[in-house]
Image (spheres, rainbow, N blue to C red):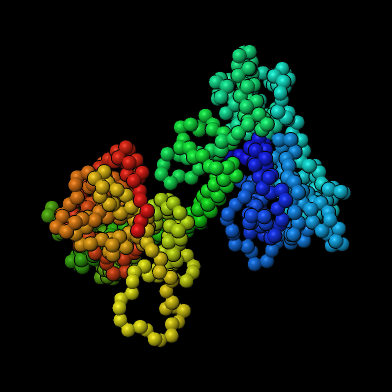
Length: 615
C-alpha cells in the first residue's frame, strides 16, 4: 500500500509531539536515497528515517542502524553542516499533499540562530529531500539534483529558488455534500467512482478509494451516472469518515498478512479496511510501528529478491552452458555410434579384395554377418587400392570408438552438473531468508561457479587430539562455526520431521544428523530436499500418517511441487552412501521402498503451520 496523503497526515499528527523539540545529534546517509537522523530527547534517543526511494518513499522512526559508506555523500555533509546540533521546532504537511516539511533551528557560521526547512517530497520516482532557506526560498541542496533538462517546471540545484511540486488541482476534504457532488459531476459521467475519487480529491490512494466504495456498500464497478441519491449519501459519509484526518477521533492501525506461515505484511492502514478482511490482521501499537514493519519487510524482501536474482542468473548461465555441452556430446556420440559400422565394412572389404577392381567407386558384397546373406553396397575411393579402402574404414571405426570412450565420461560429468544445478534452482526458489541464500552463495563459491575465496563451513565439533601448533596460512583458516537450521515440522502424530533447505543442509541431515535407523525420504530422480524422520531404537518405520506427511513435504520442497502421483523413495539412513567427489546433496542408495502420493492441500497446510524453530 502507498503512503497516501491521508495516512501521512495521521503519521505527522502522531510523530509531531515526539519530534518537536528533539535535537539532531548525528546525520548519516547509509544509502543513496535514505537519510537517518539520530535525535536526542529528554528521555533518551530515537532514530528518524527519511527515504526518497522510488519504490518506498516514506518517513518514520526506526530501530535499524545501517552500515554507513566509508565516506559520506555530498548531501549528507551539507545536512551535517547546517542541521547537526539543531532542533526540530515543527513539522507539518501542506494540506493533504505528500510533502512533509521539517522546520529546524540551528546556529549558522556567524553564530546567528536561523530556521531552515527540510522538505520531504513523497512522489514515487520523483521523491526528493530538499534543504531550503525559507527567508529567501533558496535551495541549499537536494538529495536528487536535476536541471531544466530533466524538469521544465523547476530545477533542484544549490542556489536556485525552491518551487513546491506542481498542484494537481485536487480538492481538500469537503464538508459540504452538495459541493462534493458538484465536484464529482465536473468529470466524465461514465467513469468509475473509484477513479473519480482518486482524480478529484487530495490525499486519496487507489486502496483508500476502493475502501470508500466498499464501506459505502455500493458496487465496486459503479459509475457516476449509475449512482442515485442514496448511493451518493453513503459514498459521501464513507468519504468523510476515511479521507478527513480530523473526522476520525481515534485511529486503529492494522497490518495485513497472507494466510501462509511466516508471511510478510502485504498492506497497512490507519483503521481496519474491509477489503483486507479475509487476510490475517495484526494491530500494532502505533501507525509508525505499522509503517515501519511494512517497509522493513518490503526492504528485506527487495534485498532478498535482488540476491536471489543474482544467484539465479549464475545458476541459469551455468545450466545453459552445461546443457549446450550435453547437446554437443549427444551429437558426437550419435555420430560415433553410426561410425561403429565402419568396422564391418572394413572386414567385408578385406574378405572380398579379389572382387574389387582398381578405380571402382563402390562395390556390392555379400554380408556374411546377416543370416540372410543380404548384399551391402560399400562406397570406395577410386584413387586408392582396395586394401587401403579397408584400412580407411578401420581408421574411421577406431576414431569413432575413441570418441565414444572419451565423450561418454564427459557427457556423464556434464549431466551430473545439470542435475546439480537443477537442485540449486529448487533451493534458490524455496529460500526464504538471506541466511539461506548466503549458504547457497558459499556453495557456489566452493563449487567454482562464483569467484571468491573457497569457504568450508565447519559446523561440527572438532575431534579431540593434540592441538596444531603450526602457524596457519590463509588457506587453512576456517570460517567461524555456524549452526545449521533445517526446517522442522510436526506430523499429525507429533513426530518430528526435518527438511533440508539446501544441498549443504541435505548432506548434514543425511550424513551427520541422521542415525543409521532413521527414515530418509526424497522424491525419485527429481531435484528436491532431503527429508529425515527420527526413529526410536528398534523401530523400523513410523506410523502411516507420519510417513505420508513426510513424503508430502518431500514433494512440496522439490521440483515436483503441485504434481500428482509423485514417486517418493524412502529408506534408512544406513543405506545412504556419498561417492567420492560427489556434488553437495548427492547420495546413492540401493535398497529402498517407493511411495506414490498426491499431497492433500489440507494436510500440507497443517504441516506448514506446524513449523518450529530448529535447534
